[in-house]
Amino acid sequence: MAGAARLYAFDGDASWGGYEMVSGRWFTRPGEAAVPGTFLAATGARIGDTVTLTDHGEAVAVRIVGEVFHPTNNLLVFTDAATFAATKPTLVAASYHIGLTDGTDVTGYVTGLNSVLASSGFTAQHGQSGDSSDTIVLLNALAALLTLMLVAVAGMGVLNMVVLDTRERVRDLGIHKALGMTPWQTTTMVIASVIVTGLTGGAIGTSAGVALHRVVVPAMGHNAGITLPVTVTDVYQPAGLALLGLGGLLIAILGALLPAGWAARTRTAVALRTE
Image (cartoon, rainbow, N blue to C red):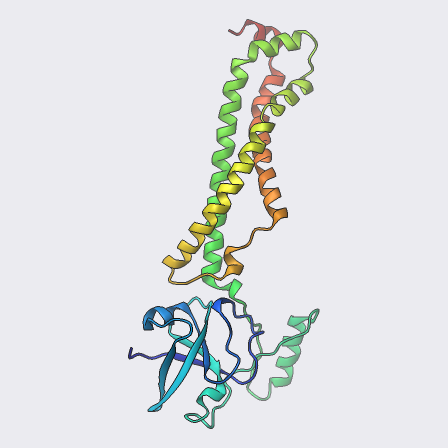
């Protein structure tokens, strides 16, 4: 394939730089390269293949050892600077990546470094991880919007079900009220009637949601022209799944509050006259 590719050549170990690997591994020696999915799709190459890059008329063979997550439509190649030592012996660094120890005040460090570099014409800025890319933000926003819509629909469904059930049982409620049931007990009884439904719905919904997530999110990334890494698709932990399951119970209780309040406020005589 003939075409231009942008080269990122690192002097030293850059595996800590925040690049997420979709498959394979980061390069560890000269002659190896990591490329995004757009490069693989455009060239038809696979991990393990050797491709020939031409730089200033000189052919340089590199072996692809991994697919890196980098949302872009450009053809990129990440490799060791020594790979192009023969074609670019006077290669000059365009930027420097600095790794800070845990607990370091990044903002303070950048501010202090910029004050030192002010007279040299260089500037320091925060690095951005793959999680902050516009594509990931868009996917997260879309997922959040769909979640809110589904929660609203589920809540309305519970509300409709409990309203119908309460109206059908209004005479029974009147009898209970006549026998001394308090408004608080009436509210509790109506809410208790949806607990099993909420727990069952939460369990089924969580299982179905995880299954759909594993299908839909990669498909969304594929439509955007990127392959998402495992850190984006495999995000559910047991504790989080348990909370999501309890979310079904919470939705059921919230949906039952209005009918429960109506049942508690209904006068005994009115309830007994209702057929």
